[in-house]
Amino acid sequence: MLFQILDAALSSTTARSGDWLACKPGCHQCCVGVFPISQFDAENLRSALTQADPATAARIHIRATASRARLTRDFPGDPTTGQLFTHPDHESAFDDFANDEPCPVLDPTTGTCDLYAARPIQCRTFGPPIRNEDNALGVCELCFINAPETEVVRCEMDQSWRPLEDSLIAAAEQRTGLEGPTLIAFALLPITP
Image 1: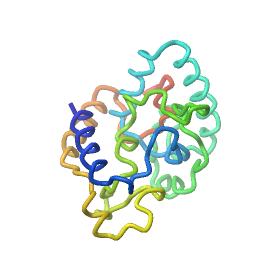
Image 2: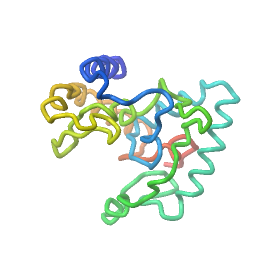
Image 3: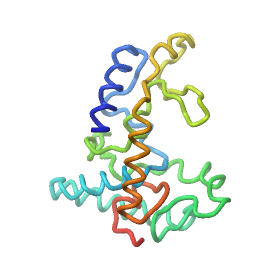
């Protein structure tokens, strides 16, 4: 249900944004550089991977294995479980961590997502104007170029779905026994709680 609500909110902001929104298939700048995902998103990705056609699943598995190997050494968290930020200094270390690492679900040939229907919330909401945890309104650097602030505000994405997301994250954490964020490369491979 959350994804339907998000898709409706995204459709609304996309319609209002018009040409200001540069997002389209093949534009994948936002797919390079790691970002935290919730345990809810991790569950959805794992489920989608088991339902993907075998050839696609095999390619994703190869990319995720290679990505995880590159990320493990300096992982700002517990690389065994994939949990980020297990020590206070990890959040500041994350700022400069793996900013050039491509998402393992990104098809490098087409520049599209191999698990698009199960993409994380961060992926679904990146691009259009959306408020962050500090209540600042942000957009993708490729979108709303030279747009007046009033235009950005007019196109802001409705986030009334956040409480539902919070409850789904809490339920996923209870099911998995893992708390807090992880990375896509770690979410896609077997984890050890």
